[in-house]
Each structure stands twice: as structure tokens, then as C-alpha cells.
Length: 136
Length: 136
Image (tube, rainbow over all chains, first blue to last red; front, side, top):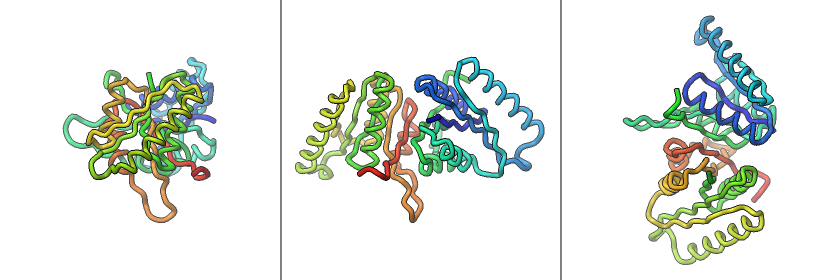
């Protein structure tokens, strides 16, 4: 059963991808990387090209690490939570890995609606990873 | 690095314990089971005895499965989230496993405050597991 990870180019998104890759190495299982965009005005051509470059780098890194993988860039007007839950169901995921923002020193951080939705509605366990404070 | 699991005698608590035990077998690492009670009036003698019996059953099961483990029953007036976070820091946990209630068919379930607090404040990743609908 594969591991599914929701990737966004943020410190917590990168931490989630790193952890998901480690878990796949441990389990000798496939990694499914989901980059979900709502499309429309929110995604312009420059941003789309930047995403494509980043996803190619991820493919290269996973190949180098010997991890069987699949990268899906989804632009179908759905919330990232919906995309992740749908793919996890489709591939019968062992679990989903998501990144959470680390609580800031000031102010209380509450869980975002996407994270809450994935935690509650996913058909499988969810591993929530925070950004490593020592890495970019 | 050990895996820490918060145990309560509910379907989701049992699902969390099962998953945590599987992860420890896979990693050949130690399992730390935390049963946290605020004590006081909330925990009467009958309930305390019942908990002790259950925790002994858990110890026996983990021994049978060959999983190196430690069961801590904490009654020190702290919220379960505080106890779990403190222990995870103390033992440098690889990750924490918690159980989440499955969304009911009617009505919207929101994440409990303990689960939110653990997800946001834990010093390590958190694996959130829902109850298996087919098991008690």
C-alpha cells in the first residue's frame, strides 16, 4: 500500500515530503506525491512553470534515492483536501503525510481547514509533520 | 527513537494502540503507552481498577508480540495533551500516535482540543488514526 503526500513548496511541505520518502524507504513501498492547485487566476503561467521545475526536481531526487514514485499535479478546481482524500482512496493508501505550520512564538495557531478536513475525512491514518526549524 | 501512543479505552484508542504496535514492529523500536487521567473526582476507585486491568492486558499483549514496551499511567492533574507532549519530549519520540473519532454520518465533527493541541505542539510528527469501523 503506497504512502500519499500532499506537497506544497513551503518548509512544512518539504518536511512532509522528506518524511514520506523515509517511510517509503522503510516500508519498500511506493510514494504518491500530490501537488494540488485550484487553477484559474490563482495559478498564473509563471507560477505553473515554477511548480513544474520543482516537481521535476522532486522526481529526480526520488529516483536518485531509489524510491518508486509517482508525481501528480492536479489542477481541477478542488480543494487540496478533496484531492488528497480522493487519491488516498483510489490507491488504497497506507497513510497520508501532510505538513503543518509550526506554532509561532507569538499568537495561537489553529489548524487550517484543509488539515482538519484531511485528518477527519481521510480513509486512512494521517501523519502530520511540522517544518524542521533548522532547515529552510 | 521510541513511538509514543496515547491510550484510552475507546475504539479509536484501541486503533491507535494497534497501529503504534505495528509501527514499532516494523522499526524494531520501543513503544511507550501513556494512559493519562486528570485524577480527582473524575477517576473513582472502580474506574481506576478497570484501567489497571486493561493496562495489564496491554502489557501482556505487547510482551506476547515481542514488542519492547513501557506503560505509564499518569495521574497528575494535567490534560492528556500536556502529558503526551511532555513524555514525547522526554523520550525523544520518533512520533506520537493518537486516535481520532470517525466523523459521524450526521453532523460535522470537529477536532477535539486535545488532538489539536497535540498536533500543533508536539515536538515530533503525529500519526492520527481513526477507529476501524469493522472492529469493536
